[in-house]
Image (tube, rainbow, N blue to C red; front, side, top):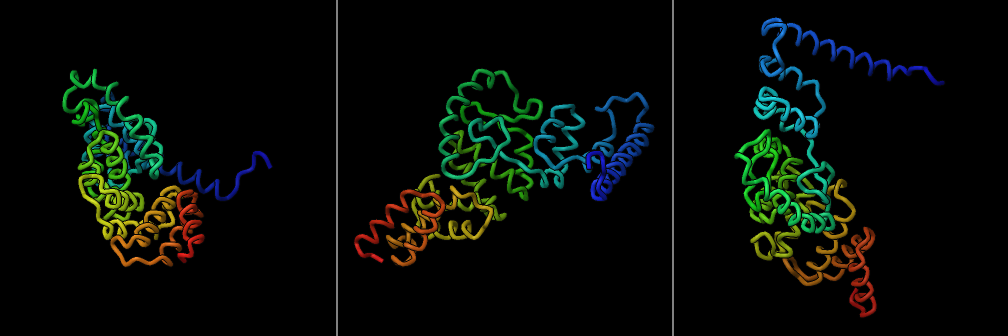
Length: 286
């Protein structure tokens, strides 16, 4: 009935109340030491670290706090544990602004379509900014900038989503070497998206890596084992694996295995795989 509270909701409200009480007590104690009228940027770092422990592990929240004052900026950018726990994502249509997820080859092409326009838009202000300005660092290529929060979280080395986002930004900027390094680090942390991207890089010979069928098959096989891989990425990965087995690149040629992967690709929406299956069946190559 309307207005009633379930036991689970009651427990949740009680937990939030306890957390907020702890924050208030910590603030009261520390502000007493710093002076009751002390502004937030004069609070001891211990207070800010204490508050951080109760905040959502959201890159959007952290990025907003980085721009509040020097105290927050230093507290967040020097806390490796907090940076390593943040969840980053990226809007493919606005690669240096939003927080949506970039997934697969379609998003990758859309990112490139917007990259030049965005670079031109920020070229005008690049010459007037310093190396670090309120949480942003100079990005190099085309005057583009990368949030200091993202750069630091990627430098921690344990945040796969930060490395994925940084790699996507490098791709949008045309920095293939930087993108490859970030995808490689994220892949080693178990990111199925990064593993898929590495497979694509080695299959197509992009990123200054050269064509390597064996390496492509290795990374794509790892990506396909994850249930978290997006359908469009799964379709592309399975299609590539089909062609690698069909042509004997990086592995022994085997039409049976190729057909298996083409079926997976077709089931995930790959029209090219469906056409290839039709050709294989009509020519008796199965």
